[in-house]
Image 1: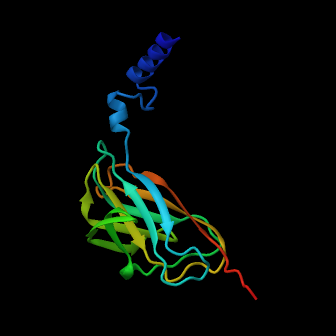
Image 2: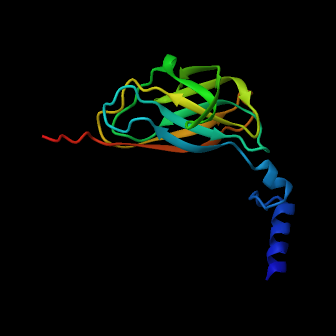
Image 3: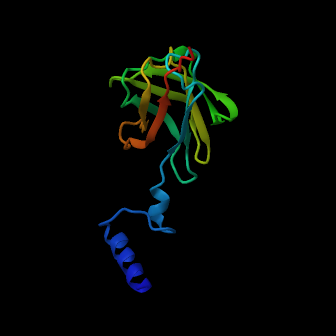
Length: 176
């Protein structure tokens, strides 16, 4: 059975019919792309001011450097507007912040998209966190999801989906 499994993997990889990653093969090294590690918010109450949404992305050792990221809100009862000049990025994670990075932020051509262009590419083996500052949290409670993608600067490389970030907001309970 083990020999048959090995033979099938060898045939699929050698013929190019399949591009799944076989551990230890050259294809598995090429297949690694940056990934969204986590998404978090400092305040998860509806209508809260002064929140920060953290999107943490890691660049595996075998991936290419990462410079441009698109964040697109794909679900939620209302569109969230961001204070782009107040938003920032840094190396590390939200609980282990490293060096602050130079970035430029712009609204994308798609609705509810923010484009993050890092002044310096994130090298393989590094982790970066984008801290988006909303003008305020949404008025309506529920789940708000964001598609996170890397964008190729050369327009010849494929854009990769890094993952989907999920934030949940809760209504404030009135104690009276």
